[in-house]
Image 1 (tube, one colour):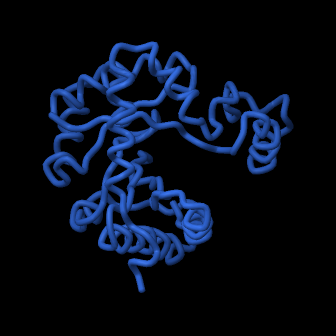
Image 2 (cartoon, rainbow, N blue to C red):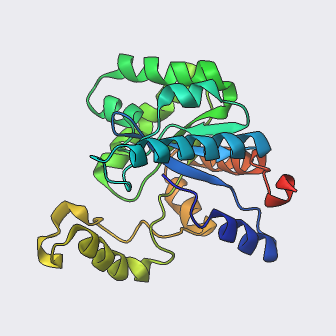
Length: 233
């Protein structure tokens, strides 16, 4: 729900010759998530405006904590140019509906996004070695085929290396003000939320008959996100 650190991220990547992707995961009203990636300068402007509007609404309401802004879907649909929309993590609306067996509703919501964004609406699948995510892979790919939409492999990153999980757990407990032994499901179940290298992702997804296709489409998607800070000059 923020672009804090995005400029430092893009500048650091440019210094070492990495084609960094600019984007953010937003929480929308109704508590569902979508990840938005800037394909070009128009996408960066639209993303910035969405976040600014969500922040301003929260700041204007004294009953709300400024740390929990909520974007509005109608604002996203009104400014689709230059944005790629990923279907969301397991907490997103589409995966949640599929998990509940509400396939028709998932198709209708995904269809509305696909109608607005075309091939810039992308179904994402992930597998951090949890049964919940693994069970969603096939339904999500089936949804992509139903809409004739691209699908990609993603990996949710909360720390750089697997060894950093312990520090992340401590920070999570500090945020929730609970001791480690009482954190329960607030903590991730394993160290899979690190920045995965290409070889590890290839090994993981080669176990499935469709994995290699998803990895190829992931690279193609990243290449489409050509926005760079120099575009703003």
